Image (cartoon, rainbow, N blue to C red; front, side, top):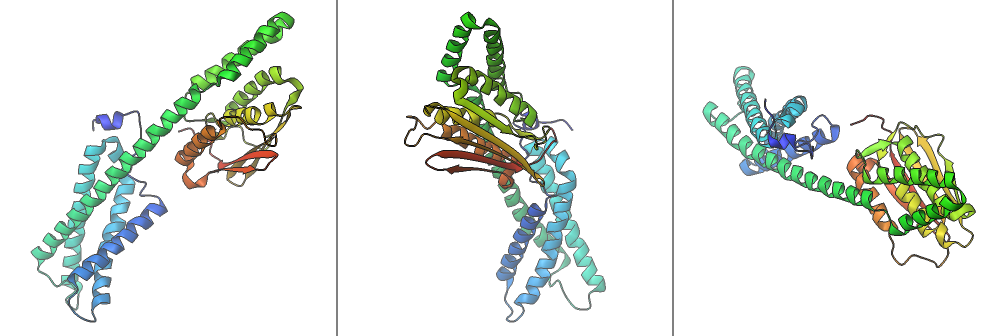
Length: 353
């Protein structure tokens, strides 16, 4: 089957939800039961038989919901590769065939084995009613999936734009200070000046040429260490960074440009404003299947930058964590008059996607 432009789009966002996930199946079953209640209320005309009619309707519709979820779980990857339009048509036809087939099986089963009349309708009337109702419900469900897909796509595009903005965001004061430091080192320590140029080049390459949404902790920490070395040349003994990250698995994946912007904020909004400088403490630990990274720095009481640039980086990191992990990750801040601490908690994942 030839892929449509939808499937070739670089914004590889799935159109269908994961019907293999327990949460999705629960939602499908819940919606199916609500539909059963609605249909029963619409057809309810015999006092005292509501629960009996609801039980019959629920049994039929829940079977449709569960079997439909199974089929969509098994065929989801193939449907996604067909593109949105074909996925809609194939899914609709497949689910309609399933509904009509199950309706026929239900009618024939109750006719042959039922001791009492369970389906109070003619054969043709029951199949036609099943087809009409299922067509409306399936069409509305597929329309919802399309709207949901477009919403997810817009969120991802916005996040990608924010990532690009963050990658291009090299604070002018940092770049100018680094160049001035390197210029002064060329006269006093040419070897160190050469190393500083190489570090600045590596840092610019990492910020401006990120190759993916996620990177390994090892690479992320290396970028932050490069930034630390450059700032150390300028701040000298005023800057101390203590890395307590030996317990972290270095192959674990993390959204790119997470640690370095946090370290930049800690230095720019904290250490630089302190006359004697201070210490930034980065701590990492593993908690079962989760990883935690905290970055704490002292701040000058009553002293703040004119612009709170740290909020942009934190907002960007929060959004990318939401996209990558959903509600399984968190970015929290603890602030006091003399300290500022950012805590990242996210699942341990080493699978490259």
